[in-house]
Image 1 (cartoon, rainbow, N blue to C red):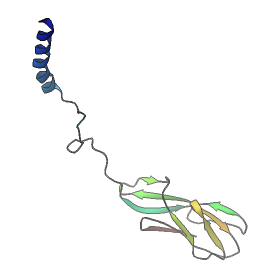
Image 2: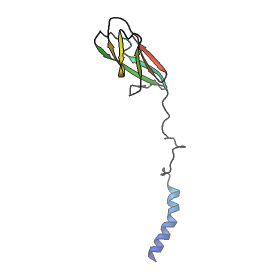
Image 3: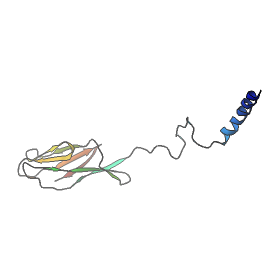
Image 4: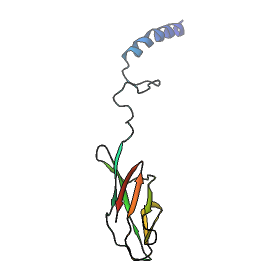
Length: 121
């Protein structure tokens, strides 16, 4: 009989405990909560640093690209940035923003990400 009375008291107390719980549950979908996952970042521009560099024939130089979002926060993370040179006889672009000088002359380097472009001389 003692076991049965404990079970009945436990079953009666369960709805009271559930009514007092204000925390998230295992079924919480985060749809109506303030701490929902952040929205996807909106990229607004791309910048190349430095904007101008002299690279001698036979040498290489590392350029960096920064993607800027709508809140003016720059990110240099691992993005799929396309790099190219407008004068491949003078300079060529290697993966990840490295420029290799081939001959004397001028070349404009372009970086593109998600429809955004920036240029460096």
